[in-house]
Amino acid sequence: MVPYANRCSDLFIISGYASSSMTERLLHDYPSLNITLYIGMTTQHEGLSKKDHEGFLNLTNQYGERIKIMYQITQPPTHIKLYSWIKDGSYYTHFVGSANFSENGLFKLNELMVESQQNFESLYLEQNKNSVPCTHPDIQKLITLYDDSIDTDLIIELEVDKDLVTENDDSTYSRNERTASNARQQTTEQSFSNCFNKQLTYITHSPSNYYDIIEIPVVFKNNWDSSRRGINNMFKAGQANYLEQSNKYPFTNTFPYNRKLKFFTDDNKILEGRFDEDHDGRLYFYDDIYQYFANRLGINEKRPITYSDLEKYNKDFVKIYKINDTEFLFDFSNRV
Image 1 (tube, rainbow, N blue to C red):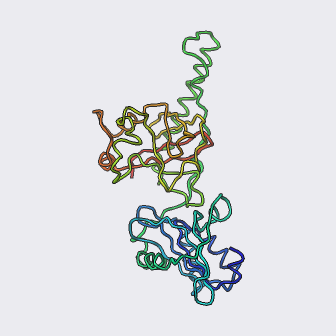
Image 2: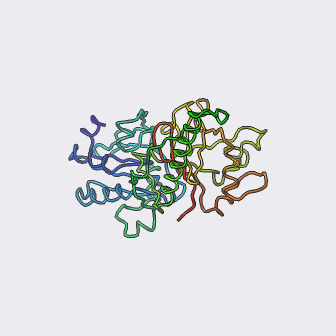
Image 3: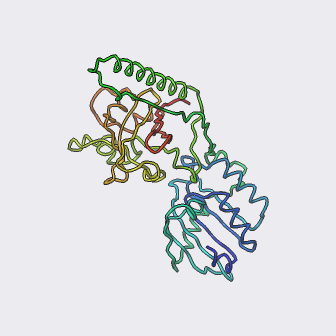
């Protein structure tokens, strides 16, 4: 960015996600640079953090005509990352690639941006047509604004020793250990019951912090193959079921490869699984994950789980909260 920010007058950006702090940094460091930013993943379903929205409003007030922030309000969302530099009133050069306009995209993650001399003006015209300014008076009706913090007291210390001793070992030591282990497990389950019964509002971190909280669709909407893949993979030649990542939350940012993972559910169960190194987008379970969801959805016959089933349940995704590298909260509650 540095050489272009020093020699160009304007920067036009289309980015799936963006942070107000990254925008402020560029405006502060390069006082002669004007920025027009189109954020593409701000539709009703995707939303934007309240913190970033307030930050963008403050920047608009502070920097006036130097900054223009636009939120997309139409479907489908835009995941493009395009940076266009303007010099002497004309496009100077463009960069296209994977980096969002955020600290993660430009500083912390491995990303790739490729220089291009193509004409991208039509993309900006289309994005402008599908977007509204961040200062729009009805912005809260047009997009979803969510909180981007979580009560850290809910991420509690866990210790479940159900494999500490065997059921057949009847020594005094083993009985005592088994009693202690059961007590710890009951305490853990009660802790989770208390945790999920607090009627808290579950929220997603802003994109720059989305490693710790992610959402996993149970069944993808409007996917013609959803009855034979993912959670329904067993109906395709009896293959193993799995949960499938969405583009918004890549599993590689949350789960370690080929390690035993524990998921403590909101209905006081413990599921175990692994993130398959050979299938980046698949989270497999040692438990019957199809049957787990079928039970919660009240499905008694052996058939594919459909998006309509999830709509009736009023929840179409699982929210995962990271405790540590191998332990997670698993929330499929449909509480309002």
